[in-house]
Image: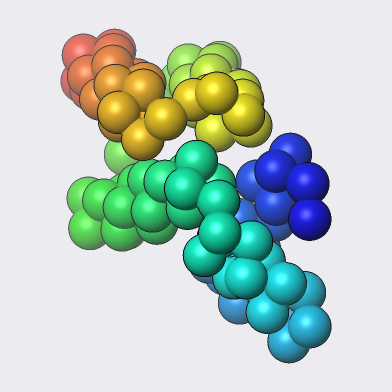
Length: 100
């Protein structure tokens, strides 16, 4: 599997939406590709963090920009786990300050 394709499937894997074959192929790739495995771990931590925090009222344009920035970082083949963490932290702080 190509890293860009794998990264486009990470959310579906977390949500249990991939069929057994696709999930197995993705997991095999994650076992062999550390950058993609880092991206998967970062996404999983982000989802857990967001789920633990519960809903937050944020202006739609801010949420869209944050999602776009996070997804761009996630889809970049050269973004490591530390960079994803930095993007997440910056966006969470920005949204917290803006959302009240």
